[in-house]
Length: 426
Image (cartoon, rainbow, N blue to C red; front, side, top):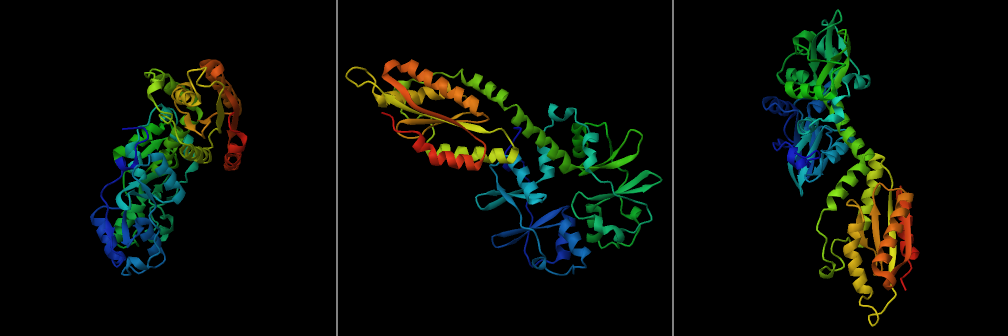
């Protein structure tokens, strides 16, 4: 599987839909029977989530279990198209503060994606081999209670699916109570007035601070759990590490890899591209292999989005206009033939990750991702030299500009000025 697979490949295809007139009690019973953490309440084109978290929050406010789901204030299910990759899904989950993401094919809901699905899809590599649980545990809070506490009195601690409390006696973890344990008790009609040992799971699955993130991920997958209690080398309880924290860290590591090592990756790709067979310039039209101006502008917008999302390096764009200095009578190539040949040669001169486009009748544009102004100027000078070397006195670059872009405002300013900057070639 790809490092960044599309969400359509890893989403759960089993979707459980309920009508809004179904009661809270009936929905809870159906979820318990089918071992579901959530269901989708569908009314027309609107899709909302009814999950264990919503049930507990509703009952904590003395909500009526016989009320229809339509009366509850349920969150709308965030959605993403099935062709998007997992990084986009993770970003959407974090932005919505939800644990569930609907996967769409057109307007049709085809699946559901959760952090569990992301965990099942990833393959931790050297990126997380040396990072330990101890490096991450400072972000977690350990909530403990003694065995004599009554479950009903601590319901306020169960708001999210990964929430849990640890039952401790004399510094030893006796068991753990998760949100799902509370849900099973409610769905099964069990009284919540009992003491904590009546509801807790045992034994407690623990992870030492010296365990790597890779080992912790493997533990969660093997035990099919969403959190692990973390202990120090002396056995003291330190906190709880959750599934979403570990998954989020792994994907952040991948983002940082592409952010800080993009130059090396581009060089590798460029080296592979150089092995391709050279295209016969006389048989290809001007537009072959080149983007239109509209496509280039869309790619510029996409680069701005990437900068804002991942705080990545800025990009640059170079524009250059071509003029033909000879006529057909005294030189075999006219401006049109020169432009056609440049259209074929230019992608070979640029890097594999650059986007090359026809800006207007006499001008070409090149998008240079992860490139500062100094690099763009060097690139523009190199292209100018190659064009003039290739065509001698027949053609020349008569106008050239290279500008670094690192904000929406700079991009809009550049696009507004670009045609004025690039005067028509003589």
